[in-house]
Length: 178
View 1: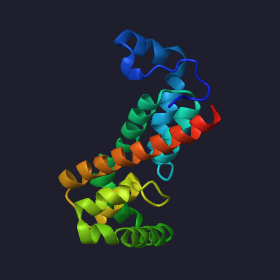
View 2 (view 1 turned 135 degrees about the vertical axis):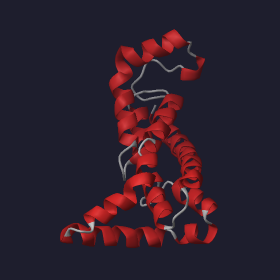
View 3 (view 1 turned 30 degrees about the vertical axis):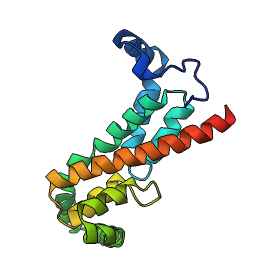
View 4 (view 1 turned 90 degrees about the vertical axis):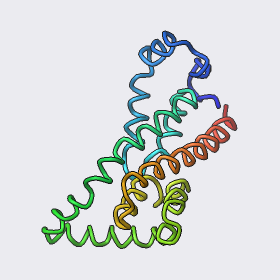
């Protein structure tokens, strides 16, 4: 896949360590950080971060790596602390209603997870559609009390699959205009 604005179209895998550092520090550090940060944001996640990074001309394999890492960064914290945060927020009337709605949506999304457990969680995260993804998967995993040692690898596998799908689609779409 070729980025739309970059003159550096080499694959990151083909660059040696010094050239990787030069590539990132030269002009692309901000784009790399933005791609990583965007992938960590709920709703946008890697589904938005990958086309974003490719639009800046970053190599597809680097964008994929940044998006996966960015998407997975908040997951351990989410899995560990979401129940505690929800418990605290429920004590406030306005937040209590929002938390209840969020949990009921997660229950609706989690039908497949309820039936297939880990495989269902992987599929929920891997399908690159609105309302799915790692954030939703982490919420569903906590609601259905899937142990963190099982939920985290399932989320990672789902994110890798979703990242591969979004990268392939984005590269195909971008190549139509380049």
